[in-house]
Length: 95
Image 1 (cartoon, rainbow, N blue to C red):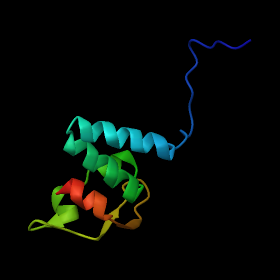
Image 2 (spheres, rainbow, N blue to C red):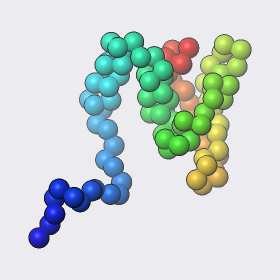
Image 3 (cartoon, one colour):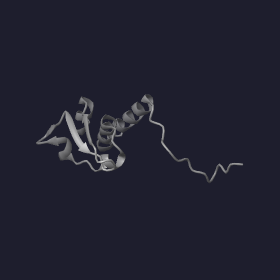
């Protein structure tokens, strides 16, 4: 017998489907929540863990009003360098 009400699912979560991502983006654009939209777009571009993504600063992705095309950061958990490109759509939402 399985207790369905008190058991929590653990493990790897399934990734968002493309239509779910577009639905979230559209809602954030309608609500004019630019910070959350920029974070979502940056998360999709970088594929970083949430802890690494939230530790990014503005100066990590831009300098003097110019947003970088390519960014490098070090993952906290593994200590490895991660290089990723920032797409034009993400650059627009960050600016």
